[in-house]
Length: 269
Ligand code: BT5
Image (cartoon, rainbow, N blue to C red):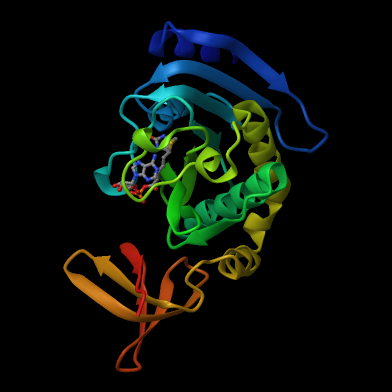
């Protein structure tokens, strides 16, 4: 397996800067294998290829720079040096309809890890954002391959703006350094996030716990929001998140709407 990983890594990038590391833990989970690259198109793409070549779960792909980082639905993800861009290969024992839990679990774990490491107070915004103040600090992108009803593997991609300056951030984004005034150590942050994700992983068996914890740190709980869906816009008070990951909105005419995709904007009025 090590040979497969090494081969795959070399095939994908000849600029591997770090040999795979084994960071063992006491848990029953497989040891972590961290592959760090200077530059990749997207850590999600590399992790996906490794998964198809039978790489073990908890293989982590990190890149200093992504040249084609992506978000949901073909959105671009700006990934210059100074941010933390990584993807975790997982083979969770989950039926397809529960895949969204990974994203919510990862958001909470990342929030806690950043708070523990930096004392910055990170909040969550539906469906996949990490926010600091009112700006976007990071995002999560889960991609997967399914086999029938089962998830064959999932790639959990996390992007966090850490040390970038203002000029390197797109509009509406913020980095930790811009708020804390300090340079943060990427390795320590990565380690803390991976530890949090691993220690909360068993919660996948308890969807309501994951969703409740996410909701209790949601920045628009309960505020007026507007969700833009393909071909529709829903405006109202965001009241809850359901176990299936959708957002429950009480519309201005007091109807309850459940939305399961879209972009959310918090309304000031
Ligand atoms: C996301 O998408 O928020 C998920 C981003 C996931 C990025 C990670 S990095 C490691 C892994 N490898 C990848 O290729 N991706 C994952 P979405 O909700 O679609 O938000 C995308 C939108 O956020 C863009 O359309 C921009 O408006 C904005 N944006 C782009 N880059 C940003 C950045 N660095 N920080 C904050 N906002 C950004």
